[in-house]
Length: 535
Image 1 (tube, rainbow, N blue to C red):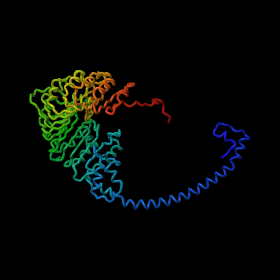
Image 2 (image 1 turned 180 degrees about the horizontal axis):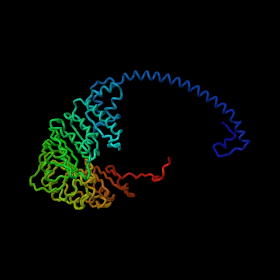
Image 3 (image 1 turned 90 degrees about the vertical axis):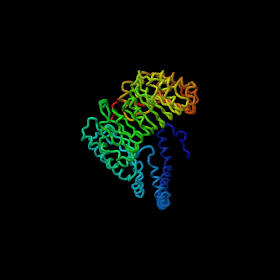
Image 4 (image 1 turned 60 degrees about the vertical axis):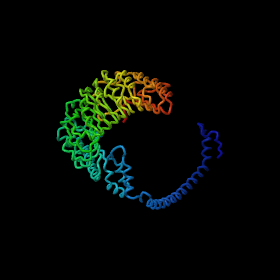
């Protein structure tokens, strides 16, 4: 549309009084036309709304009938049950959560709810959480008690629906009750009451994992081996420990007869004061064992291992490694071995008594940085010579003297294909590691490049000649040392994690499909922290 003010439009021009009157007269006819068009638009919208309303009626009619033709409605019951089972988490137990299977499946329709309630396997896995352990609320508050009772009631219904299926149960209830709790306070706790609710189902226990203060285990003291004929896995983590509990006697306080279950093949425990030799296990049935929190003497470990003829995987926290026994313990089936050491200067001396010809993976980690920590490299070399199939070696180099780390790498057998150097290789089952590592910190004895000479050794092709995977997680290695290693050893996979920002121009040197480099995320903070908040 033509306008005498075309050159002034969309500018900051201010019209004169005469021009204002001229503009008002100019807009009379266009405004009338605009009103007429708005009226037509409203009329057409009303017509469209009627068409849309009619369309929705027909669409609802068609959709309702098409739903009858849905293929899932025609699936046989057994197929539908298998689909429901496939919806369960594959790597953990099912949470008491309405947004997860099986609970969410029962909320689709009454038919699906009937199927879920009548399919016992859907209810054979349960993860129970003490509400007070994550909410921060006091365990004795009325709100916490009400919520806890709700969860206990829901868990009871859940277990009842499991029919005759073997049960996999995990429990998370750290911190409650306190170590000083009285017996009646213990028995009123949510964790203790949940354990009591499990007792009627003991004949169907298959896999149990309890993370809680060990005092709660008194609820299970009356369970006998004959009560747990299906129990295969038992993991006990004491999450109520402190320095004052060093004198506690785990064996006397919580000796569990259920450890003698005839089918128990995997046993993990993390607690202070474990008396390994007095645990009523059927050792010859064990294929996996992990003992953490208590640093067991080598002699006691060797005695236990000598009974485990079927052992495939084991992990121990080793205290004094010296043993006066000359007997050789052969573990013909052992594939994976993890040793955690802390304060002993002879933690690995017992390895000359151990023979594992089929060992595939060996991890040597430490829970503290001890400048006096030394290991007889001759003993370790002799142990390596007895392993013909060792492919994976994991070492936390930070706690050890640099010379020892180099000696270890040079002693590795040529069969090694996967090498991992990391300060935190095997996360402990519980918080017990903090009790051992309080006196030492890696930053107190290491610099940003103190392990460069270790990486330099690995550039030599005769060290692990068959190596194809290397993983480094260290705050004490420079990027330049890593670049030299990457260029010298063309491996299939290299994963590097630094604990500091990248150096300028360094990251470009890592370009390559076989190399993955990780740096810490940028630190974010509020620039308004400390300022008064406006209400």
